[in-house]
Structure formats: C-alpha cells, structure tokens
Amino acid sequence: MIKMEGLTKTFPGPTKGTQITAVDNLTLSVEEGEVFGFLGPNGAGKTTTVRMLCALIGPSAGHAHVNGLAVGRDDTAIRQTVGILTETPGMYERLSAEKNLTIFANLYGVSDSLGKAGEYLKLLGLWERRHDPVGNFSKGMRQKLAIARALLHAPKVLFLDEPTSGLDPEAAKLIRDFIEELKSEGRTIFLCTHNLDEADRLCDRVGIFKTRLLTVDTPANLRQRLYGRRVVFHLRELNPVWVELARGLPFVKDAQAVDSKLVISLDTPEEHNPTLVRTLVGAGADVQFVGELRHSLEDIYLQFIQSEVGAA
Amino acid sequence: MNRIRTIIDKEWAEVFKNRLVLFTVAFLPLVFTALPLGILATTGSLMDTSGDVADLPPSLLAACGAVKPTECFQIYLLNQMLVLFMLMPLIIPISIAAYSIAGEKTTRSLEPLLATPITTLELLTGKALAAVIPAVLATWGGFLLFVILAPFVGASAAATGAILSPIWLLAVFVAGPLMAVIAVNFAIIISSRTSDPRVAEQMSAVLVVPIIAIIFGQLAGVITLNVQFMLSAIAVLFVAALGLMYLGVRFFERETILTKWK
Image 1 (cartoon, rainbow over the protein chains, first blue to last red):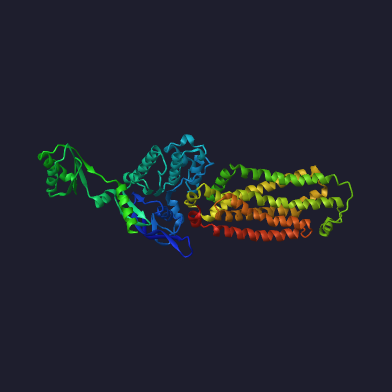
Image 2 (image 1 turned 180 degrees about the vertical axis):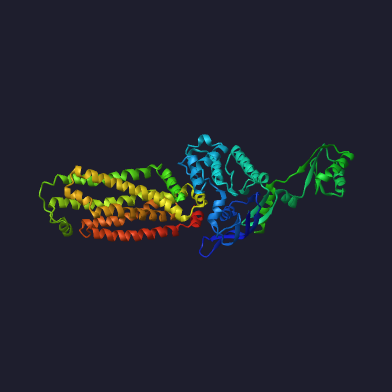
C-alpha cells in the first residue's frame, strides 16, 4: 500500500552550498490495512516524510508509491486517494464547522458534500455545533474536525501527524477510539506520534526514525529483541537458594533477585511458567502472584534514540 | 470548474467576514463615486457664466468643438475623475487578494488545502476571481450610480454625453477589469512570497503609482485621455495581465511555501 525505496529529502542549508538532510535513504513498506507507527523526536523528518508521501513536496532522491501511484508522477491522483491530518488542524476559523467540511468535500469531488459533512459531524459529536465558527471551538473539537476533513473522501490511506498532541486525556481517548474504529474498517494508517503508549496500543508495527530508519518491527518483537521475555514472581520473602534453583532449569536464560521478587528471563513463559511455579512452591516459596515484566515502548524508543545519539 | 467555484465560495465566505476588507469593498466605491458627483454639483452653478478656458489643454479644446467653454471645463474636470474609476478595481482587490495566500499561511490552512487534488492553476484562478469579481462589480455599480445621478447634480448635456463616450466606457468596462486582474495577480505573487497579509497589501499598493502618474500627467497637460490613449493602455494592460497570471502560477512553489514559511 505504501512503499518507499531510498527515499531522501534534502533542503538548502543556512549557508550557501550546504545541504541539510531531513530524510535519509528511507526504505519501508506498509501493508494494506496496517496501522504503522512512525516514531521519532522533534525534527526527525517525520512530517517531511508524510509530506512527500502525500505528494505535497517532492523527494530529492529515491522513490515512493502510495496505492500503487508514484510520488512525483501521479501527484494529483495520490492527493485524491489519501487523507492527511496535518500537525496543526488549520481550519478556516471564521467559517462554521459544516462550511469547513463542505468546502473540502467539494474540493475532493464528494457528490453529497453537505450530507457527508453532516455524517462526520454526527459521528464525532459536533452536530449541535455545526453552525458555530470554528474559531470558537476547543483544541480537541478542532482536531476532531480536522480528522473528519481527512476522511470525507473515504481515503484508502490515512496519514495522521500527531493526532492527539496537546489534547486533554478525554479528547485524546476519543481520538484514539476513533482511530481504532478506522483500523477495524481496514484502512491503512500511517501514524506519526510522540505518544508511545498510543503507538503501543494502536500500531501493528512501529518504525523508530531519526533522519534515517533506526528499526522497524512489531512492538512485541522489539521488546523481545531488546529485552527478551521476563516473568516476575512476587514472593512473601526471597530465599537466595531459589534464584540458583531457577537458574538451574534448562529453559531459564537468567534469574535475578530484585527486592522480594524473582525476575526470570525465558523465551516461552506460556509453556514453562507452570513448571517454574511447581518448582518454586516445591522448594518452599510462597508465591503471591506471577506476571510478565513488560518494557514500555518508551524504553525501547529511548534505547534506540540514545544509541543513535551516542553513535553520532 | 467545480473546484474553482469552491475556492471562490470559500474566499467570499471567509474574506467578507473580515470587516476591513468588507469596508474597502463597500466604502471605497461610494467615496470614489461621490467625489466626481460633488465636483459636478460645484461646477454646475458655473454653467450660466462665461469663463476663460484658454489654460485648458489645446487637444481638449479641439475635442470640445462647439461645446460652450464652461461645459468644456466641466468635461475637463470629469476626465480627471475618470482615473478614479480605474483606481477602484485596482485598490479593492488588493486587500482581498493580499489575504488570499498569506492569510492562509497565518491560519495554517494552506497545507490541508494543498493536500487536496486541486491544481495550482485552479487554486490561483479561484482566488483571483474571488477578488476580481467583487472589485469589478463594485466599480461598475459605482459607475452606474454616477451615470444615473450626474444629470441631477448639475452635469451639462455635453458632460453627460462625455461620461458615456467610448473613452469612459473603455476605461470602466475594459481597462478596469484588466487592472483588477493585474492587481490581483500582483498581490498573489507578493502574497506567495511573504507570510504577512499586511506586508502583501502594502507592497501591492505600489501598483497605484502608474495611475497617480496619469493623474499628474493629465493635470500637467502632458497626457490627454482619448480613445487612442485608452486603446494603447488596454493593449499594455492586457499583455501585463497575461504576464502576471503566468508569473503567478510560476512563482507559486508549493514546496517553498510549505517548508520555508515560519
């Protein structure tokens, strides 16, 4: 659905003859129906990448295809088939919510522009405020309206640039729930976000990007790759003998004592946890409860970004 | 065509909610129409007196022919006012067009607009027409009001005839719209290169300089507005309008606008 090969974008630098590379040799594929999280710090080149994929700016080198259409060759057709939520909502503040949407529906050639605008205004809970100037709307309402604008022409691919940035928790949840709904409809979503918890919840795969692609995988695989899988045994009290006992089991890769907890690294906890529990209980351990130790996507993200900074 | 119509609709819906622009479109034609009417009212009382018109430009005196010297003087004054009807379609659209690109930049609404399948030509045509149409209609409306009221405020029969002469009709109905097209495209070019609508508006105002030059040229007797002058001016304006439309599209670089504007 989205394919990039060696996609590169450079801009003229502050001094004559110098160049700044915003996106460097990006090769990536996003499949149909996938929600792909594009993660990176400010100034990493995420927005530049989205602008290239939406045929708003041209690449300096490399190729990209969206919906089978080539960036740089089929730009008008690409813009017809993708929806974009830009970093700032960019609504016409003096105009009503309904007018804002009908203008864009007409520009996209939607046949029943007023009907379609009404449909999304109802869906996002803005129907009662449809005649109000957007300048009177809260940030969350504007963001919802901007998402509706991106969806009016039923795009197959949706680019969302920081959809929940600066929203209060309630508005952010509403937007996230809506993205989940879009995901269930089978739309391909390219999500740029700083909100790693959001990416973890919504994305099938994530790419960590800072001018170049540092890594790409599912959040679960990234955890596995960096930290392996770990199980935490909460015990009434910890006897050091049990640590050695656990280490002696053939499927255990490592065992550590942390306070009164026993942290055990292994590949398949689903298969080996019952054996572990039986062994520890048999040795006299009072097991209070057992859980998987999950590293957040934030840990993974920071590890990649910091190692990139260190390498630089 | 549908996208151009949508842009015009959008521009009108938005721009006419701006009080400053609305004031310019509504108030300026009234002032520029009232001014020559006031002059007619003042000079109307002179019609029964005989005056010395020896200082009037010889070309005008020759054109006046058998017309009474005082009527000839009224025509002379009216011809100075003709330029006002050429200024109107120049000034009005500048304030509308200056907001068209730079205004979108300040509200950050240009990126979503450029993300639609609209072409640069469609976008600029829509924005240009949205500014030209009200300017031309306001000018024509002012002129119509002037033609209707002139006889009632002291215009002689010769003066009324002069208002409806080919020079006036060419100026109002051909040169005026061309000047509006020039003004709008110039403002759009400036507007594309600056991020502040006020800067765009002020820089675009430089276009009134040639018109002011015509006013002074007339007063000094160097320029006489006749059909030949008007046809030559229309030819120049036509070429300038086409050139600026071409440059407007060329200078509108989506990438520069999106990435350089802060």
